[in-house]
Picture: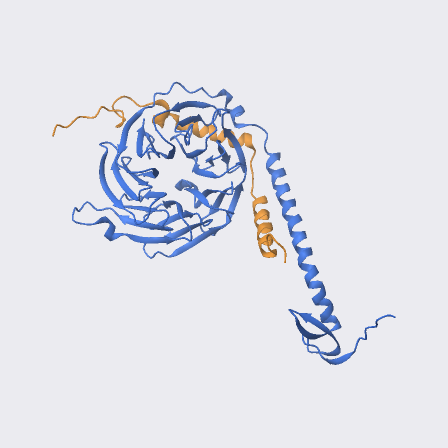
Length: 395
Length: 68
């Protein structure tokens, strides 16, 4: 005996288009509606559409990625070190620790130079932020943050304020005052608010705007006076660990590096990512523009530093050695861009010949990981901060 | 329904890739030459590279000791 289903034709107003048609029962989220045959067809194919669209988009994305690689490869006609074969080799280096700044009670996490080429601000795991005179090694200011792990600090271009932040998810600005009666902490102003730790911060060309990077995967541009968010930058797939602003002559862009192994170049006005590079094999801890602004270097947990040229739109050099197996935490260029200083988790600082791709020198001195490294504004020295609680100025 | 990126996320990715693909590129040989040119032009000003005459680098000067 066979079961027969009888289709009862109900004639009436369609629940979707309201036209007078023969209706069919249709179940949407376990609610029964009556659709005309046309609307029922459309509903059935909608679900089909979405998965078709997803598949189509996925293959379009893969196709575009492949095309991007092809375009980049077409212009890869020579290696940087081949072009640099005729350049004079570097001489012997005499670089020593000239000053040791002691005073932090725990790991030094970040430091920045003042434009006066003399003062340095540094921040530490113990929550302290100290401003030093690097010539005399005297401490000029000290403030205790309400959180530990102050991972980011920056000096304002005017030299009149500093910004810092970390596990408090904020970036705060402290005006620097020499008045002994004033409590620095009292004048603190909270500027940036993220939903995860602050990993990096930098003033733009003025004291009025700050750029921040955060463990929440975004970068943001803030107005210092009002604390207002001016622009946010979304695109990283994981924590953003570092950022660097392009040298002023080259315009409004900055580069950021993150745990998603990507380095991304952003347009500050539009919030758009204009170029992205994904050749590192692990987290990118540090990014720094080449002095001309046409390229940038990155240091990563994959134990390599790499140079990316923005106009060729590709990686043009890798700085690595089989004997170097610890991650690079911090990189910076010398004034002419010929030298790349990189601090590593194996307590050393390697000096790389940017053009020839070879290591020029290795500097020992720190007794724990080098966590931060910056060349002074006039290029006469560079400062490194370490988990051994000290900062060293080398020249 | 489906795990992984949604339609809108993929659409954004496709738009972003199209933008990146449209960037104007120059040859590595030209880019490398210009990086090298910058280095050479500025080498004389680079204190860490060539060193400066004794006395003009404040960090290399011997510090005077003040007796308290």
